[in-house]
Length: 131
Length: 129
Image (cartoon, rainbow over all chains, first blue to last red; front, side):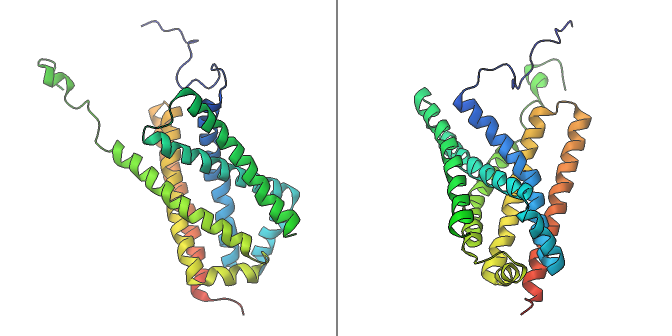
């Protein structure tokens, strides 16, 4: 059977017009995948370093304190808050609520606001209040 | 599969009856994460410093070690299910899909075993002081 190879196949990541709700959906997957890879490796490294001894733990800390390490940790915390808020949104959608166009768009946007505000609050406290 | 009767044509094409359990477990572990990750975040924020002694002394307590072990189980189980869905959606070739899912399982169990062993070691061997 002749098939036009240029036809887009699902899932369509490149041909859709970006909207708040589809962005929330794809960012949910991106943040989940990011935490499952980078986040899990950092968490496991932290625990294993602490179980191994002072020297390994200090080596972990030297990376955590490095500007590059900070960027990774801030990124992971944003991924966490973003995934958390859009995960809560998923619970609402799971029971069949919140599908009206305006409501759906409003809560999709709200997940992004929550993610950014919580990340800023956490690191504002850690870096400037706690020191 | 038969070709004659209507029943013969559709037999074996239905769902495996496993999709629902998978979906529910994803939500159940999400609720677990919802309880345990804010606990970890608040606990870490409340620690005075993040040096070796402070962190291991904190993690050696039963009230920290046990929730931390539960957290590893809940979080790792949740991401195992989530990444499986992502792989099944984007990897279409059967061989690559099987290899990806196998790698995902090994990765989950491997990192999970290291994480749980590390927590157990810190909790059971006590603290330096």
